[in-house]
Length: 532
Ligand code: MSP
Image (cartoon, rainbow, N blue to C red; front, side, top):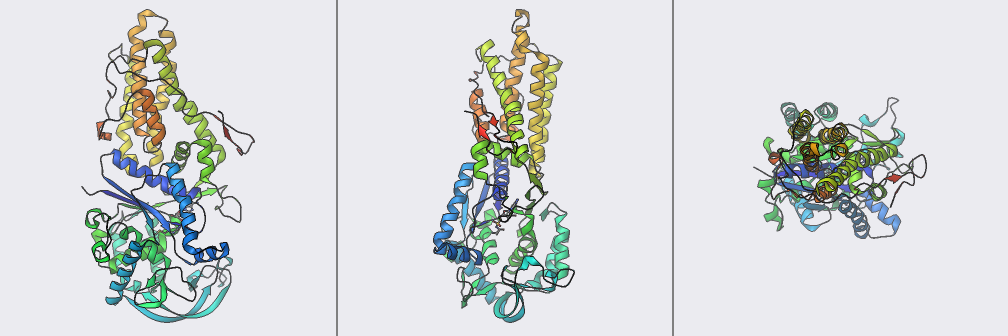
């Protein structure tokens, strides 16, 4: 079977990362880890988008060379991924020579195939957004809205890609491939956009007098490549496309890897870039229908119903949150409080609750109590075959149902539901302690066999939880297993899950709190601190 090839959007390097960037990378990382746990080989590519007008402008303002400027911002992204445990196999840099060679090779091929032409266009041009505007961009009053800033009349020569030649193919492709875009309802927006702009070709150049920070067109040195064309190509340049022709080494074998199983992107960059430009570019390069990648489109994290923005001063910094709530605590919140494909509202209070109540009070407490009792009453030794009863049977059934339902939820990007399955075990096991009252059983010699069964069921349930939550909280789940004195056997797969992970006589470790309570300094949750 082919490896599971997963990519994310590559982040702009004109500003530091925020919570939205972190969410997307963690989402892809969770899927990559889940697929590995499910026995699949995975190739996970993420990276940064380093060219374009915005970078050129920001670098100028900072008095730096663009390369130095993007290198510094890139370091913020890679440091954050390291901190959050986002474990990619490869990191795309669009200023790296191998990528640039592939972009130029593609441009040359498309040029030779007659897919590119030069034309002069006169029209309305937004200075702020640095793009030509069409009538579609006019508001109901017929005017261009404030979001476009100053709009001037401009005449300019540029290179165009004959996108319009591929529109009929694309419409047919989208209609006959309902799984091209996940969630499926987003495909309608794309079809609508195509109906509206079907005849328009894509401008793929910017004149050098306006923009120098880009990849030069190999056949016309007065122009650099439009940043979206360059950026989209990362998905194939870093997968080994045209590697031999471009003298690129150390990359995967393209035929083995392609097409991508998932380009994980936000809803804002679905149409037109990923759903229109990208498939038509691939089609023009000669890719067949079977070689069109799949798009996984996530929603946005907003703040109190509004978009995050610098001007509103509501940009959420994932670094601070990871320091307060631990990286895994933040990952947990980001995965459980949103349904993939839909928007969610970021909330300090809900993050605090997820950490203190669910992780600390629910999971951490369960682990601590279970290990403390096992150590106090049985020196931490698991005894299988104690006195079984309906309460034990019911907990066992909950565990089996959870690990049976879990893979399908995760596979279909319902990560929050995958977490819910694992949480059913946590809730049931906490209830099980209340029902069986092991501290009372310990006082009654005649209940020794029952106590064995209870302690065994708790430890075994926790071993299962540590596997199911592993993609979401890899560090904490590793620590749970350490405390259980249990490690995942080599090449362990989800299909190896069964009741009976811990053998008779298994020696458990000691419990130490995993999620120290975070105290809140003020009502808004600002200044939250972990208690030492
Ligand atoms: N550079 C382009 C992508 C090129 S892909 C070939 C870009 N960069 S970005 O930095 O603006 O956004 C990167 C990703 O972060 C996008 O998928 C975008 O949707 C996502 N997010 C940006 N803000 C977000 C939220 N507030 N919430 C969730 N994701 C968001 O677009």
